[in-house]
Amino acid sequence: MICNSDQRVFSVRTDTLDVRHDRRTVVVVIVSAALVASAGTAQAAIPRPFQNCSELNAKYPHGVGKVGARDKTTREPVTNFKHSTTDYLRAMIFNHRLDRDHDGIACERH
Image (cartoon, rainbow, N blue to C red; front, side):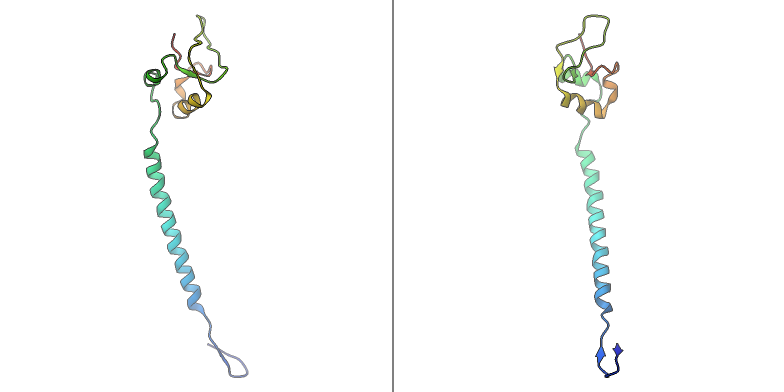
């Protein structure tokens, strides 16, 4: 309590500051726990699309490549692969070894 020269009494509101601080702490803890829990389940929910070329070739028999990609080979080049930049990038994000010759076509087969 603070008194001024007129003998009026003013109350200092320290209890409001403490309650706000405690509420912020609780909110931060709850949000942090929710983020940690959702991050763990999010990674578990997203499977890797293709572990190896056998799995990719089961879906795309002649491979998958970027639009406009050309096969690097000394033999006749593969041209009947699936032309999809989106599918190629999705596969390459999880396993960059699917395109060993770096020609923009993953797991090409003749």
